[in-house]
Length: 164
Image 1 (cartoon, rainbow, N blue to C red):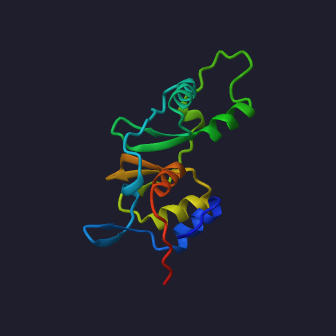
Image 2: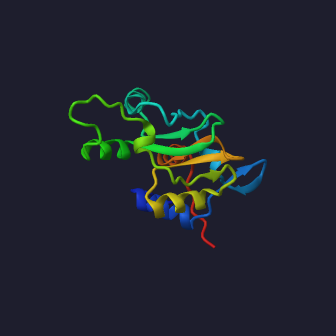
Image 3: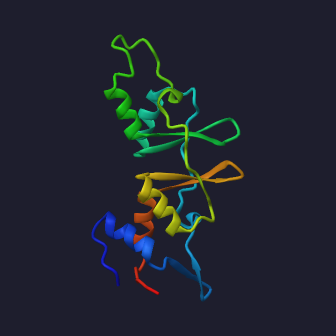
């Protein structure tokens, strides 16, 4: 049994451990689709940042993909982006301008396919300091993997470390 005490231990386990699951007595590599959240809350580019603030508080979420009318990912808004915009005085002092999601969202977004091995998902997230990765199929958003999804999955799993 591997003892995981912090994020670094966790990512090292994912990166160097054999992350597999047994199904019908067959081992297979775990993939993004095995842990992703499928019911994803999204925003549109012309939505107000006030809507993000309300959703984040109500739904207790920190990352919201921004999609177009075809449900294709065009950006991502995080708590960090929101608070950075506030601290940079993005909104003018009179408060008469409604700031749109497109004004503060990240536009160059990394997405992953549902078949992406969890080892690679963890590496991408850790190496780029991402808290989430949208999961797409034919450019359409089908889920999201967050650091909490990893923790939720592995908190209910017997973590055995098999090194080659």
